[in-house]
Structures are given as structure tokens and as C-alpha cells.
Image 1 (spheres, rainbow, N blue to C red):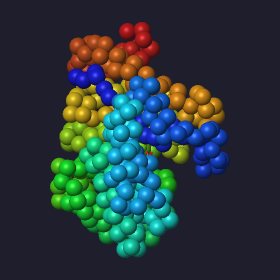
Image 2: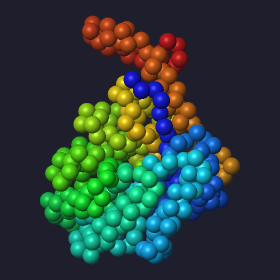
Image 3: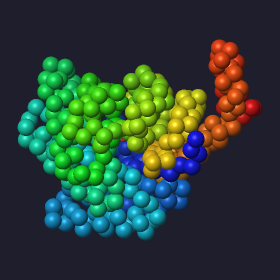
Length: 343
Ligand code: GLO
Ligand code: MG
């Protein structure tokens, strides 16, 4: 059982409130100030997209120096870097996907971009590369050859694995948005594909709770399955109210019991003991004024910590007895009482 956790968030989790229907409504926070805010909120690590750390305009010869500057900023703020994620969805060249694009030039650009992210990660002091394959799917199924797309995934992963012997790649799978129909919608799909790469031991997963919920799955079970494979190397905790757009609500905000089950699986299976971090991929409500737009992070972290306490305090022998006698109604009441603080 592990009860001591490190926390992280992305620089994108302190944003200006823009959404597909409206522009930013909060002041932008300078980079160094974001780091200070995360530290002040009790975070230990920060997460970056490649171009959050080193903008694309920086010429290739200066990438390492710029990454080193960012690393010192993080160190000055007292933060480590948890991971770097190549942003393979924004460039117009990646309009049809990056890894699975039908255009070979786009696929080559994706590999180059992936290698650039690895270069940046190396300087920032992390070996974790997170792959959220945002546009690796289709709007209509006829658009791409699915088997060729799976091959292209393997080719992309092998290319990065060969490029740096120390990195590990964490697939962050999501079933939809921005694409209608994704390839490899779930963690299990990605782990099955990982087994076909040149080095399966270096390919694992980061599971985002909201993505599991969008799949109609329970995140704690997806996480348990990845742990069982020894491949839960990161999490993005948040919440999601049903099958809608990806809401990135504060952890526990929509379904406290579901959040509890996530925490309980992590606590009881030693998540964190090999350096895994509790990442929070949460968005402030758009209505939140600038000076109060960090509560989504502090609330989520506090909720996680309180649920760790609930998990630790649970009477495990009572649970075992209820399981043995198949009294799941009794077990249901025990869990609800614990969540309400009455047991
Ligand atoms: C979007 C994803 C996104 C990723 C981030 C890191 O749905 O959750 O926020 O976590 O880009 O790859
Ligand atoms: Mg995420």
C-alpha cells in the first residue's frame, strides 16, 4: 500500500478559458509564473507539450539551449518535469493525422517532431514521452486503411524507441474528440499494439479518467488492467459527466465514488513507488475569474488526498467478510458511509 504521492499538472491546465465557441476570457499567465503557481499549490512536477517547452520557431541548433533554459526555470521553481508530449495535432500538415496520415510527407514530419520532443525531454531530465494520438483516426471510416494505420503506429513507435534507448513511451488513449472514430480507442488496444513493437517493455500507458469514461468504461478497471501488465506509468485524473465532450472536470466533481475507486486501486497496488506521478488534467470552469482560476487544481489534489485517507481507513477485514458472505448490499453501504465520513 502506498500513501505518499507526487503530483503534476500541465502548463495547459492554467489556461485562459478559451473553448470551441468562445475566445479566451482570462489574462494569460507568464510561463515562469505558472511554474511558481504550481509549486505554491503543492505540485512536484510539471508536464509539457514539446512546443510548450521549446516553441517551434526556435531553430534546430538552439533547441537544446532553449530546453536547458526551461529546465533551469523549472529547477528554480522547485519542479521536476514529468513528461514531454509531442503535439501532433495542431500543425495544418497533420490535418489528416500525423502517424496515420495518408500523406507520407506528414508521416515523416510526425517522426521528426517526435524526435524533437525526445531531444527536448532528454534536456529537461525526463525519459517519459506521452503520446496522445489526437488525430489518428477518421471522420469517416472509408478515409484510411485500418491495417496500414496499425502498421504506421508500430513504425512510429519503433522509430522513437530506436532514436533514444532510454525513453519510454506512454500512450494516452481516447475514443473520440477531435476525431469521430479513433484508432486504438482504449488502453487495451494500445497495449496489444505495444506488444508488436521492437521493445514492448518500453511502451506503456498513461490513463486519463475522462477518456475511460468516454469509452463507457470504469477508469479504475482500466488502470487496474494496466497495473496488472506493469504498464501504468502515468495517470491524468479528472472527471466527466457522462458521454459528452471531454470535460476535464475537477477530480471527483461528477462522481465521487468513481474517483474513490481510482484512488483505491492506486493506493492498494503501490502506484508511485517506482516514480509514477499523479497527474491532474483538469480545466478551470470558463466562468472562473483570473485570480480564482487555480481552484480546479487545488480542489482536485485535495480530493485525491482525502480519498487516500478514506482508502487507508477502510476496514479491510469487514470488506473481506462482506465479500465472503456475498453481502454486496452491506458492502455498498460500507463504501457510501465511508465516502460520507460516517464510518
Ligand atoms: C486531451 C488530452 C490532452 C493530453 C495532453 C498531453 O484530451 O487529455 O490534454 O493529456 O495533450 O498529451
Ligand atoms: Mg490528458
